Image (cartoon, rainbow over all chains, first blue to last red; front, side, top):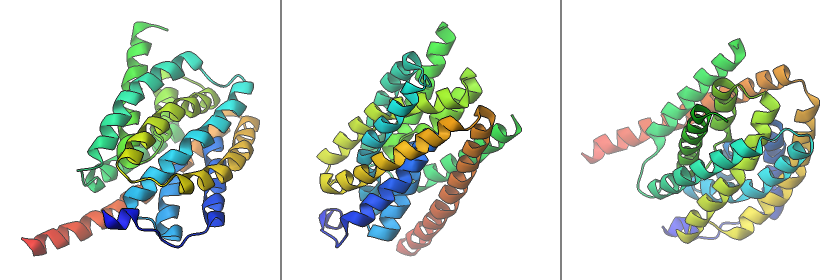
Length: 126
Length: 136
């Protein structure tokens, strides 16, 4: 636990630059940007995996809010669908965050990664 | 919305939220293709809707992490400041691109993300199994 809480040397500028690149990705693709922030925090700032995940998730809320505002102004948000999805994902996210405490999630992540590749191919041939 | 659509949305939300909490991502990377492929949403609407959904999901996940001592707010603030500026540019660009083109760009992101996860985690897992074998 100590390594999670220990203060490492890091600059606010590096964090802001990582955030900015992730923000572009988030607005462009409707994702949180964690897929970029987590590895960047690990490799460039020296965070442990779990701390990188947690920090990334916290930054995602305001980043996504900015993107949602821009899309909303362009009438490109289905609010009713969003409410349902959000309510459902609140159930899921609590369970997932709790399980992160006791689960080695490498194997699950590999399955998830493989699933993303399949989805990409389906979207391309669609 | 038909009852089937409501069920589909709930199913998509629970699965995406679970992975978000577990893997520290927003879940959008799963929700966007699900909305496009299962619900026939346009790519723009799927992405805009995903952004709105991500907000409460990320917030509640963060509170759990904060309570578990995994999160320093200072770090998240600097990340978010840069991120907010980047998000304006990213979303304005996305809205300026045609729906079919945006869908293909998104597929590219999925492909890169999937490969990255499989390669990085695959290496981790193999390392762990080697260590585990030595322990036994």
